[in-house]
Length: 560
Ligand code: COA
Image (cartoon, rainbow, N blue to C red; front, top):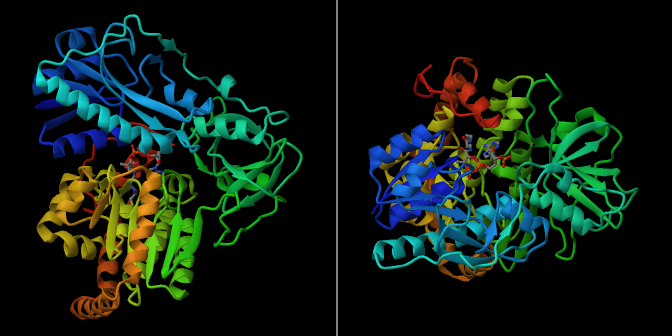
């Protein structure tokens, strides 16, 4: 079927719908709903048999929905209506939710229902759910709706007579935390419902700022609302019955002042945190601890699990360095397999564009960040005494996707979207991709992936040879399955042989072309881009960070 996706942004869900329905054999096109005119032009041009809106913040023009079947993906169960559905579900502490695919109609979310799918809402951030359980349910419901529509005989269910619950946009006053009376669980619900956007507006250390992310702390206690500690650039803030960790913050823009961006909380608050103690936590935390750490390590049988989880999948220079130190530690342990990757959400999206944008010298920070990333990838590539598995519970892009390809095996949760390319950020790319990508898919496909810069599903990645395993199931089931398979891998005698072969292969490759040559050549092009202010990268990065439309690019990356 010819399907046109209309979306407010080419976000993760839209990418996933495009990739997975494309895998199913449909012919897919996407248009961003900038205005009614661009929607009309796209509909005329593509003459779609079906229109789907995976994520739409505005209403479709009436002439479009009255002449075409337009299916809207609503992140709420049947009867639920309104623009803040998922925010409110998380804020209210719902543990079960759903996604409904309904037909666009005059009244928002009131159209006939083509399909719906229930899902669990574990206590994590809204955006993490949106890319996890909610996206899984959305894809199931969309597929059912498409099949029903294609059958030509299915009659969608009218909402007439159904109890509807319309809820308004969730505004800051309703999100506002009362630190003097709210218990930790309420504080966490508010923080999670606002993460990753819009954050919770608050006042902290004399400034107004938006707080992003919230994780419980089991030991630190203090005056409610006070800042108790920092850890790896997160802040710990006391509640009436405990404390919470907040990893990121954005200062509120002052009238007439420059736009502000979300940063690690330590960077956002800067000197205001002077005197607040840094409270490190061990890399290996006992299971019973309820505290926050963005990198953790634990062992089971002969497997070391190095878990990392960075907001938005972005990895700053310091985060890369800390992860490298943790990886080096993991490699000192008597294990045969090391598994890299968090339990949920993004694997990695490469260098931290916000931290770079906020730096006094963005070119120098880009350069430092890419080298820190390369150091990490090089450490993975040169690990020859054990197997390394990259376990992708969620999406990976650009240098983050290449980090995964440095491992011996790449295991993806079904539903993962991969963007193994750099062009859209105006970069040639690094992270040894000129070695690892052709190694897996051949030079021609590697070049096509860079050129096309298209998102791909986990199963398409497996078909191409970019992924070795794709596992169905929820994020929780994926974690358990990864643990089971990794333990099995470490336990087979064939693994000894694989480790020996891997070492020999690395030595052979090194003799043909040393890793340092790949690194130097990639970095020479990256350096030219970073330190040439006219390169599109700088404007593309600024647009991405400030959530503006990408400017037109005048040159191919690295042409300078
Ligand atoms: N640096 C800083 N922030 C990043 C980031 C990066 N490399 N990659 C993603 N993020 C942030 C986004 O700004 C967004 O922030 P928000 O939640 O506050 O809005 C959040 O992570 C989620 O990203 P989003 O773009 O909404 O997710 P998505 O799943 O729709 O799209 C990508 C995923 C990877 C396609 C998109 O985020 C992207 O293009 N990232 C940049 C990748 C890149 O070029 N890296 C640098 C080269 S190595």
